[in-house]
Image (tube, rainbow, N blue to C red; front, side):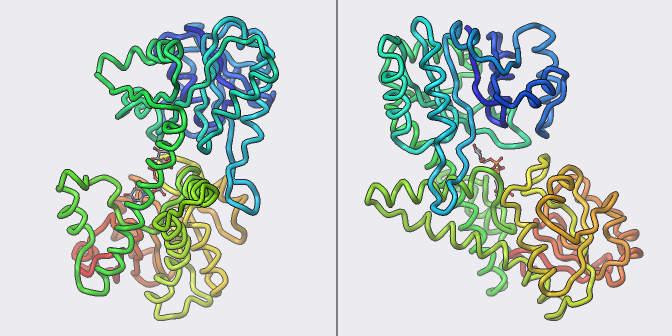
Length: 435
Ligand code: UDX
């Protein structure tokens, strides 16, 4: 099949590359000439394990192309994917759909023969209807169907998530379009991936409901963690105790400093707006948004309390800045709130992250970015583990102790245990674990 992918951001680039690897001929289109030149020169603009090699392989095998000129690729395509950004519109939390709609207009003028237009971007319920109306208005003769096909890719694990998904969701009432979508995803039949076909609006809602549910799950366990600290319980044991119940499931029950990233914060906000616009309230989601935002700030208070209520003039060493490991993404990362609040309380910040320091440099000031974890720790009064990168899981604790002014560790990801740290001579606190 021939695929045109509009937008070479995270979703477009991963999806386009994986479709090419399935054997389809894929052209990725972006207006940003610098990005396309870089991609053609083999430079990948995002940090995603395995992506560079997969792009190189499919470019070499002539199944993957990058261009700023959409005309030929869209004309020849069986399916045109819209994978442009849908940022939060300033001020009101709605998703900004202007990139989606201008892509629809562009596609309308070019399609040739029956073409499936697929929204991969996360879009509010009803966006597919609007895309369909735009295409019909712009090109009344066109033969096409608009399909919703949401992505469920985790940063850092995106290739695996694309190639071995739990399910593929296809939202359309066009049989012809379903056949094209089945053909595109045919390699997944081998591992019997369920393909769920629904009406388009349902599919659009599935994406938001999935992300919102996961955000609820994380926020739930984070609140239980706070309770554990108050009543002498251990949240990791609670997570295991409830997670083994199949109805609950053990994933996304790790307590921490609050969720961040490009999806959960944006999508929970957008879903809340979708619901209120529809005259239906989603109180759980509204609470989750509020609780999570407050939690990120509360993590700085945790450090301050641990330091006896005062960090003025103290040096805090942060290990990890990205919102999670294996990404350089700093969007909505808890580290941003933590740094801001600690600095306001008079602390000096040293920090190390294996991938995100360049990004972080645009988002925080007066932070000394260091060459490695041990450099960050030098002469600090306390270490705060913010992101659970593997390289922080087995630190040389004797070395850490000798570099610190005082042996204190705040572990916001629960990667060490109280007993172990105490045995190594550290004062230690973590999230939701009284023991
Ligand atoms: C998420 C969804 O998982 C993906 O399906 C969707 O398409 C995009 O959003 P991503 O944002 O890349 O993916 O990261 P994810 O691994 O889901 O983590 C999101 C945030 O939740 C991170 O800040 C992470 O630290 C936090 N988290 C996750 C927890 O605090 N506890 C958990 O148990 C799981």
